[in-house]
Structures are given as structure tokens and as C-alpha cells.
Amino acid sequence: MSLLPARLVGTNPTPQFPGSPIYTKGQIYEETLCVGARIFCPSAPSRPCTMTGTTPLPRWPGSYNRDRRGDMKREARTRTRTRTARPYPASSFSEATPLGSAIHQYASGQRVRRLTLLKQMQKSPTSGPTKQLITNSGKYKITIGSYAAEWIALTPTGSVATELGVLTRRKLQAQFSLAIEGVTPFVQLYNEYKSKKLPTQDVMKDFLRESGVDEELLQECVDITSVR
Image 1 (cartoon, rainbow, N blue to C red):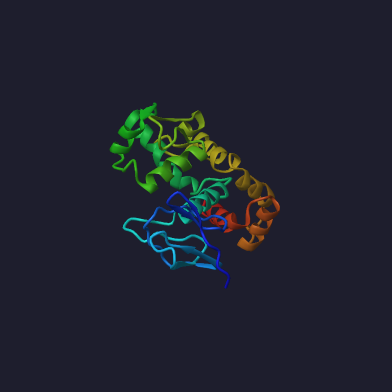
Image 2 (spheres, rainbow, N blue to C red):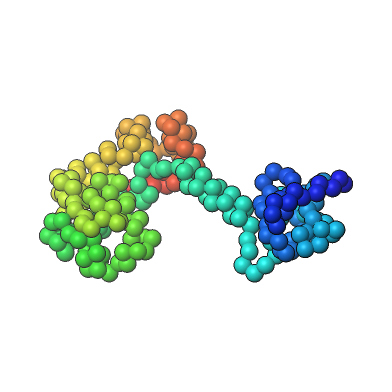
């Protein structure tokens, strides 16, 4: 293995290979694997500090590999950016209606502060299920307002679909409009198989795949459609 002596800049030795950081005099280095490269310790120039890895790791309390941490952050951002967005709500319509029904019950169907409504419903505003409920209600267009909004209100159709009392023809039509007609994959399945026997899940997945739904979402989409 060949030796590549460090170029000294003041008291800081700079290893001669790409990506190497500059360390201060007197620091002790851990072994890292970097084939064909060594750095001479400033405190003892005659003794080379062997390096194994692409980035030497200083051996002092609280130290860390800055380059690796940066790589991990970039990877996390990339995964977040590439996450597939659902073209449908992540629950059945019936599971998304309690928020609208609560607005009728506690606020006479009128706009209400989110925190006040959730307090009446005895739900935590920061819990995952509560946030998901508000998100799904919004995706079905039952309500307006995100889980971070100050106010939540019913849409005109959502108000009819979740009004308290018996199931009337008007209420049923509003529910169908929001639960099926308002969600592209669901209405595509409905139009394809209405007045026909419901096909198997594999057949439905094939249809959704041809309609442009991502592969990783097919099973969930079919499951939600099957329970409505």
C-alpha cells in the first residue's frame, strides 16, 4: 500500500483524498478504511495514523460523522418527496362522517373552532387518528379545514350527508355524491361494474392498475371500496 503524506496548512493536516476534512493539531483518529491513503498525526509526524473508511472519525466526546449525517438527511428528504399520494381518502365514507355529525350535534351545523369541536368529541387534537379523521373528512368533501386549521365547517353537500335523523332520499343522494362520485377511483369502479355482480379483488385491482392507480395502493383502494 502506498503512502500519501498529508499536506500541512498551518497546524492543520489535510489528507490527500477526496472528501477528507481538516482536523486540528493533536487530535487522535479512529481507524477507517481508505485503501492506499494515510495521514501523519501532527503530534507525531513520524507515526502515520491509519485510515479505514471514506471519512475519518475524530475520537473525542460528542463527535460524529458529519458527512454521514448529511447523507441520511438527504435520503430522508428524497423518501418524503417520492412518497405516493393517495388519489382517494384513506378510510371508508362511514368512518369519515363522525366529524360532520359532531358539527351538527355540537354546533348546529355551523362553522366551529377545531379545538372546541374536538374537546366536545373527547378527541386529542394532536393524535394520529384525529388528524386522519379530519383529513379524510376533507378528502370526501364533507368538511372544510385541515387538522391545523382554526375553524372547521361543513360543505353544503356534507351538511346534508351527515345531518342527524332518519336516512332520507335527499341524504342518501348526498352521501352517494361524496362517497362515490367525488372520488375518481371509486366512481371509475362503480361505472365499470354497476348493475353487475361484484368481481373478485384481483379483477378490481387489474382495472384500477389500468386506470393509473399506483401498484402499492391497489390493495388498500380495493379494501376501502369493498366496505362502502
